[in-house]
Length: 248
Image 1: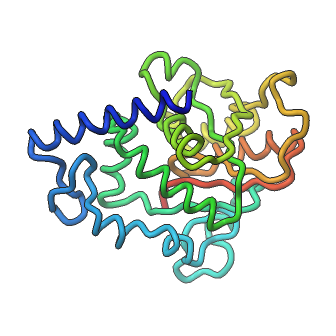
Image 2: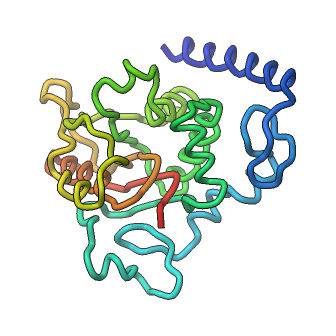
C-alpha cells in the first residue's frame, strides 16, 4: 500500500508538472509570481507559512485563536466556551485573504497537489508540539465513494507513508450532513452525536494516552469538541486539536 501510494503520487506529480509547464504553470496567490504546480511559490511558503512562527503567537488556551488584546482566553470563550474537552488547540493560519482561495482550490476544486504541502505543515506542527499519534476527523459516510477522495484522508496518507506518523482512525462519523451547511446552533447541537468510536473489535487493545485530532479548519469548534469528547470517554487522556486554518 505504501509503495503504491508513493508511486502513484510521483507519477501524478510528474504529469502535473508536465501539464503545468505546457499551460504556463500556476500563479502564486500571495505575490503573483509563477509557482509551478501549486499556487504558492517557494519564497512565499517560506515567509508566510512558517509553522514555527505560526505556533509562536499568543493564542486562546481554549479555542486556539490568536489573541489581540485579551490575555489567556478570548472574549468569545469567556462568554460561551464551546471547546471543553480539548487540552490544546493549534490552528496554524488565519482563514482570510489568499488562504480562503487555497482551501477552496484544495477542498472544493480538488487541487490535490496541495495535500503534500499541507501534510508537511501538519508534520512540522506535530513535531513542534511533541505529539506522535494522529486521529483524523472522518469524512461523512459515502463521501470518498462519491467524490473519489477526502482532503483529510489525503493528508493522512502522506503523513503515514512519507513522514511515518502513527495514524489511528479511531472515529466514525454518524451524520451525513455537511458541517458547512449547518448554522452555529446546528453545529453546537451536533456535539456528542456526530462522531463515535469504532466498533470495539476494531479498536486497539490499549488506547493511546495522547492524540492529535486533525481537521482542515476550526470554525465554531463543534467538530473537534465532539471528537475529543468521544476519545476521552474511550480512554484517551490528552487531546490536541490541530487544524490548518482558523476562521477568526
